[in-house]
Structure formats: structure tokens, C-alpha cells
Length: 154
View 1: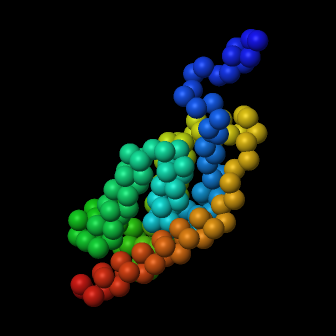
View 2 (view 1 turned 120 degrees about the vertical axis):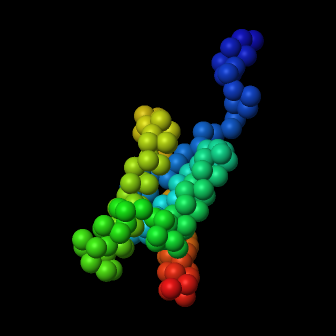
View 3 (view 1 turned 180 degrees about the vertical axis):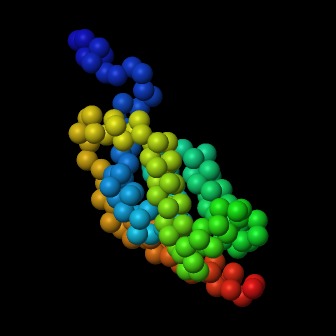
């Protein structure tokens, strides 16, 4: 008789489950092992799971900026040149790894509320293996393609 009192009234569709994100541990591993391009792609997947296309576009814009930085070393700023001069040739991979970890931190802060909600309600995160591997392979392929383009342009 009073069953309508037990139905949630704040959502349009009470049967729609809340989106769960991939774990922060998997995001960190993707950033550390896969690099900057991989964490951008992986975080875009998290935004897509949250149905936030604007965030996904921001990630892709970040990826485009990183591509431009890698291709055009003259405009990448004095930090890149100082880092390579100080640590030697070949050390730019460490700079890209630092950039990937910094991107992980920023992307985590963007989704901090959703990660905390997942922990609070004890929701199980989806399996990250396939998306993480795909993002790392795609990120590696993008890095190889960019390095090849830079060497051919030089």
C-alpha cells in the first residue's frame, strides 16, 4: 500500500547502477609502466564510464599538447632543454615518466569524489586488465610513432 515511499525520488531511473571506476592502483601502474599517453587514454575511459564527454575531450586535448611538445622541442620550453642538458641525452624518458605520474595525480583529483564513494559503499571496481593493457600498448605505439616522426623531421 505504501510501497511508493520506498522508491528513490531523486533519480530518474532508480534501477540504473552507479558507475564504478577503475581502481587508483591500476591507474598508477598504467601511468608508471605505460607513460603519459597511456594514462591519458586510461583516464578518458574512466570519464567515459562516468558519462562525462567533456572530461574525455580534455584528456584528448592534453594528449595533443603532449604530442606537440614532443614533436617541437624548440617550443617545449626551457625545462625540457635543461632536463636533457643536466641529465644527458636519453633522459627524456624519465621526464615523460614524471609527466605521466603528474598526470595521474591530476586525473585522480578530478575523480577523487567518485573513488571515495566507491570505497565508502564497498562497490567492486571492474577488472582493469584488458583496458589497462590496451591503453599501455596504444600509448607505447603512440610514443614510438612520435619518436619516429621526430627523428625523421630532424
